[in-house]
Image (cartoon, rainbow, N blue to C red; front, side, top):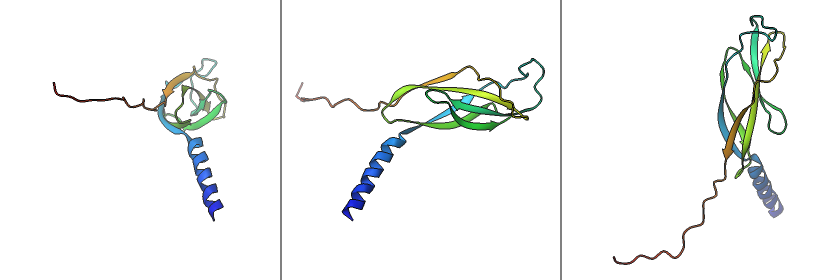
Length: 125
């Protein structure tokens, strides 16, 4: 029984630190009005939002005509860095555009407080 409890505590400790901290973000963009050949865009179906720092990862497929999207990403606790995202447009024939210009989001989760001051004294003025 003790082994099960100890194993459970280890799993909870490892998984807890592996989950990290969630950042709640909002992406906004200007919808395209033309196809890549310059003709008017009449069959926009959706967008694909990707995280591109490190490995390219699909965050979500967003139905048109949206031009914003709320989402969360997980980063390691006590970490700092920059997240990078791109978005693409997809038409009703599943043709996907090239990537938008990248958008970056710097973050800093280094929330370790400083040590407490030492040697405080109080005296009469």
